[in-house]
Length: 243
Image (tube, rainbow, N blue to C red):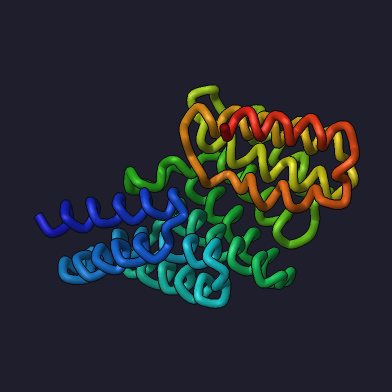
């Protein structure tokens, strides 16, 4: 029963994280972690720590995000060979290093994620909660990490390929990835393409009522181009969707 309660607390934390209510999310994640420690379920502990690491990345505490991702990896290792879990956790670490703009550590973490994923492809068993981390997820997350590391030229084709592979049912993920694609395109001076990608993300996020797609951050990045036709059209689309 305690593991059920731990999973419910983790899911509640994720829901508040999705709503960007980080303090409340942190409370639920901490509760899930306490319950998981009580059951000594090291893989579940790793799962919760990975959630906490991602939250710390988006909450502006990348150093803590690195610490939590590494702690999650240590917990997973207690359970023996778990290559798919380690692939996901290494990517969470890469996101944190990207926020710190630590290119060396970021690339090392990306490499470990890729290597672990290749090992997992040999048929090693994996817990159900990490099976979402498939080849498409590896590709798009690698692109996001590279974008965070300031390498938009390398990031753009990977994120675009992830979007191409994702199904229409994966609206939340597609919305999030479309905004990352828009950001990578903007950083390369591809203003029209960036606004097109951001408009796609707006449409997708509106259909799922999700606030996680960084509309405000992207909009602020358009300030130097405020008079460009593509930006004027995007702003009108944003007003229509968010009205």
